[in-house]
Amino acid sequence: MTSLWSGELVRLRAVEPEDWAAFAAFDRDTADQRATDRVFPPRSEAGYRAWAQEQSTDSDAFRLVIEAIAGSTFVGSINTFDARPLDGCFSYGLGVLRRYRRKGYAREAITLLLGYMFGERRYQKCDVGVYAFNEDSLALHHKLGFAEEGRLRRQVFTGGTHHDLVRFGMTTEEFTALMP
View 1 (cartoon, one colour):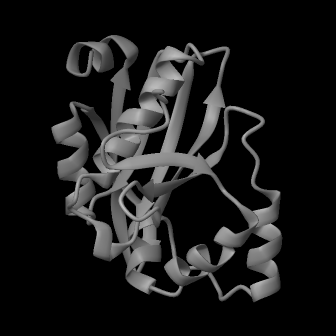
View 2 (cartoon, rainbow, N blue to C red):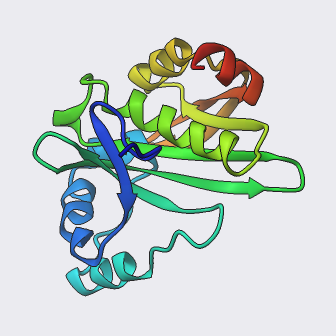
């Protein structure tokens, strides 16, 4: 049996209520929070439990756990947002725990997600924003074949400094040509 949600390294799966602890641990690392979104105030255990319970995959805006196939280990998450079916455009965000970076997990998770959104949901364009200080993510998106479409200056404030946001895009045709 094959699944479009599984690759060689990772499987994407729905957030389960018991995943709250992994998300809480991820959020305790300020560098991880800052690289993937921004630093938020601490949340209670009950708050994490409620949040995990509320995650749903009933729309085109959803969050999935990135799980390493070897060991069924939580390595991060990927989420879609700003899904606009009428326009055929969507965005995604990605967070991988630092100890699991540079192992191919993010690359495969992105590829699986794009395959679903382009191949099953009929989206025609993916837009991604990457913080200019996140050199690993910039390099990853270039390697994946995303086109750099622009730079929004001083769009993100974190760590006491304003940073640029680099915009990337990929069309379904570009995805199919790069990853048939």
